[in-house]
Length: 120
Image (tube, rainbow, N blue to C red; front, side):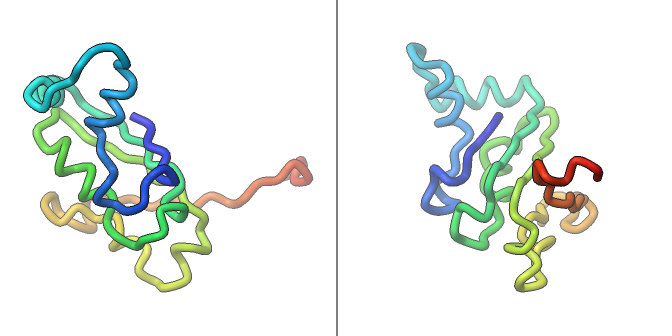
């Protein structure tokens, strides 16, 4: 599931069910059908552009609320590193308190690349 966070005004608006409904176009996905679907699947969720969301709330916790009954859940969050490092609380923003907090989180920092960085 790919969620472009710049489309949302707050973390509370981020909805996996709405994303799947939009992807299905002509088929209606009721809440009950969504819950049945979630119980039979595992998910990889890409949350792109956390810094574009404009808030510093736990977006992983919001998505997990919808997917807590699934067979497995992993998330990738993209964000400008300067945005997170500015207040020193970056990792806590993505912990899942219900499944072990820090133990359920792994951070990977990637260096910025530009076309002029061909030698790197």
